[in-house]
Amino acid sequence: MAGPPRAVAVLRTAVRPGLRGSGQPVLAAVSGGADSVALAAALAFEARSAGVRVGAVTVDHGLQPGSAERADRTAELLRGLGLDPVLVRRVAVGADGGPEGAARSARYAALAAAATDLGARVALGHTLDDQAETVLLGLGRGSGPRSVAGMVPERTTDGVLWWRPLLGVRRATARRACADQGLPVWDDPWNADPAYTRARLRGEVLPLMEEVLGGGVAPALARTADLLREDLDALDELAASELSRLAGGQQLPTHPLPARELGALPAALRRRVLRGWLRGAGVPDVQAVHLRAVEALVTHWRGQGRVDLPGGAGALRTSGTLVLSPPVVRGPRPEDAPHTREESRP
Image 1 (cartoon, rainbow, N blue to C red):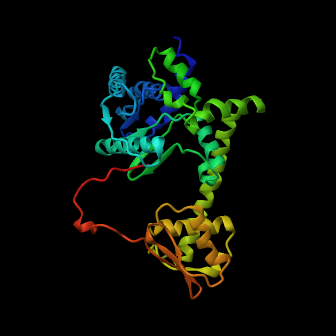
Image 2: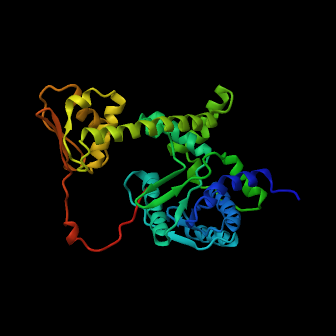
Image 3: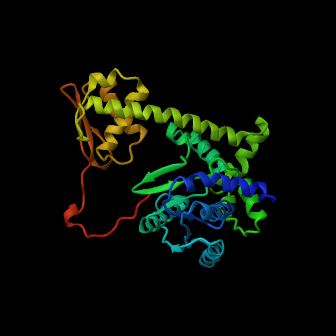
């Protein structure tokens, strides 16, 4: 008996280990594009033998004409694949972070809320090509090695597991799988609009790099991200161990740290210890400029005063130790706040 077309087989093989490795229900995030439709079809097929319930969510951002009708057509397609439940979530997109960032925030909040309600994990259709674009964006923005390390196959944020089983699959393979199965797909015009940085990377920069370097650029970038992530994970584990040691095993996130011992650590490890210390105390949005200023209290101590940090926190060197005052809590106290469920974001 002949098997499925090659592209279809590749997609099914990609999702199979994750489905068989956990009985937790899955919600596929489906925009109607080739990547997410191919993901949904593979999940629907493999779910039968894995014995895992698989549903889907499609989000209507309301930003383009006909978006509501398109979301309904996508939901109908997903029901035809046998996914259950199939949810349509209509969201209001704000203005923070620009059009792309605001739409992403609204979408992920809706996905997280749906997953929390059903106790499910969320499957995302990001491919190897998306990973390559993410690496290039991180390099171009100089936003640090974690950004260059790209997306991870699994990550849990605020109780929601985000699963990306297609990071080793090419975008063209996903599109071929849809064609081989007669599945209609929608091409979002934003993905080809040169007004957006990622669209220009996709349509101009990566093709030029492929031409100049002789091909294989996207897989090489994705491979680099994998290798870098292994190194970063090891450093993060060492930093967590050092932070615990320097804090004397204390669980208090604002426990003072000895400046002399911090200064003796290698720079890469020292910065990770400091970042972990700040984040553990609830300091939001720790940027490189904040980290450098706090590190200067250790490595370039000249009697300088308090370093102001996001959220009203502050770091100060006194009597040979780093002391942190936590962020200022504004608004009503937790016990006075209304009892509403907060939507998670990845």
